[in-house]
Figure 1 (cartoon, rainbow, N blue to C red):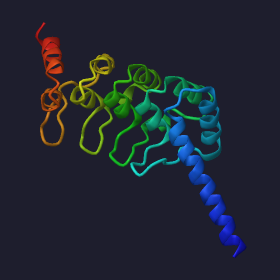
Figure 2 (cartoon, rainbow, N blue to C red; figure 1 turned 180 degrees about the vertical axis):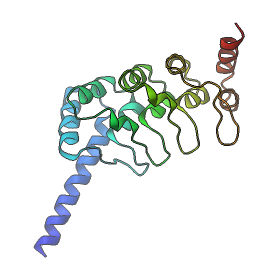
Figure 3 (tube, rainbow, N blue to C red; figure 1 turned 45 degrees about the horizontal axis):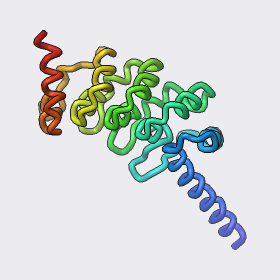
Figure 4 (cartoon, rainbow, N blue to C red; figure 1 turned 180 degrees about the horizontal axis):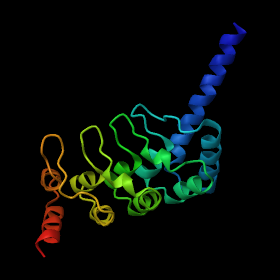
Length: 181
């Protein structure tokens, strides 16, 4: 019985810390950064939610540039972890592209430029995601890293399809003007 209680307490403590880590990825305070450093040091790249997101995915989603730089500089997140995929096959760069976090995308690409070519489960690259969500600043960064703007998903869709389907008509115009000048 004592062993069951000990396991429950350990499990409950980890779940509590995991929830706090999830929340800390969106907070840009010194306390949140210290917690994230300690959590990552103690637990490594654990999954924080049902989508199988890691601390890295959530830092990209929330645009927490300071925490990302700090964890990378401290060696708590490695360049190899930048390739970690969640349940949808997205790497953290897909999330930075979706939410328009240019600086976060630049940090990741400066460390591992080949991230720009990574495809998720739907066969979408970060460039495709940036077009779909109308994130022009991130689109420009990704385009500058030799992203394949002519790539197609399994069903033959291009980044122009993504921009139009997402009703990102300004992105469509911007993309079209890139290749007609």
